Image 1 (cartoon, rainbow, N blue to C red):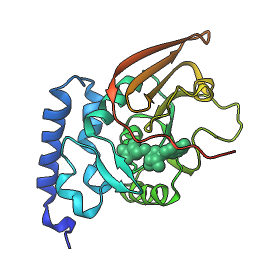
Image 2 (image 1 turned 90 degrees about the vertical axis):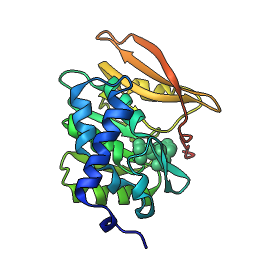
Image 3 (image 1 turned 135 degrees about the horizontal axis):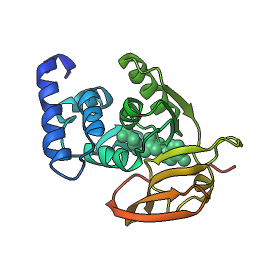
Length: 219
Ligand code: SAH
């Protein structure tokens, strides 16, 4: 039975540093705050025990229930696009392993994260508590069917792909807000939606990605 003890803390930290240098900074993620956050979050705690040896590889990994923890580069890149000065709170849809959630918690005042599979949400919550984050609230539910509320978010990140941009999420975006989301079926692209102070929307198509599909629950 593989265990965490096979790797020393030094080896894991070294692997993480190499991940940030070669997979993230050497590509196009340059924001030092994002790079620092990626250095701090122990990705190996968010993967299944038997995959710890691959935790710092340049790839997504399975986390059970047909879902995946995103590739480190994609986590860093999406975070960099989302980050603005005076960030406040962020809404994440698709907690999965909780890894992206932890990276957000390093940079945003408060993270509200929604996961449709209860077991994944509970496991992520356990790991996030164990690390010591106190600015994360984990919710179980369908991120597209959030309870009716006038609350709007300046930052929204979605880590599963709907076939089309869900307008109900655009509606939850505050003025000056940003939404980053993979959109598409077989071919998906990352989209950055920005709302200006007067509520006008612009959409930038960034680059092709491969995410699991966003699931729907019937109302
Ligand atoms: N950022 C996560 C990615 C997990 S994969 C990580 O790095 O670990 C995407 C997650 O979105 C899956 O866990 C899936 O169950 C969840 N998901 C899919 N549809 C959803 C929906 N409608 N609402 C909330 N979560 C959803």
